[in-house]
Image (cartoon, rainbow, N blue to C red; front, side, top):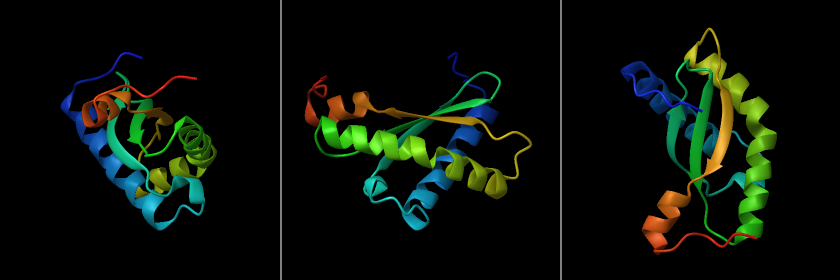
Length: 113
């Protein structure tokens, strides 16, 4: 994915991160999505794909559960995002575990299985 650095992409990414963070805290019913921290959003060049970076504490098994919970909630999050931001086209949401932040905080990369 070719990331965009335009002001519009950065602004839209910030709005998406704020809105999804609020939805996860206030409306998501899935217990796997508790204590998920969003660390950033990167938009592609045509604003059709949003990579949402997140962190969560726990082992690799817990991270896999959280990832599947986020993937399951994608449709719900995307529809709510479209209503809240009034976008003509709601970008595809891709959730990516933020290994960079994990490495910065704990001084090592997470174990790969």
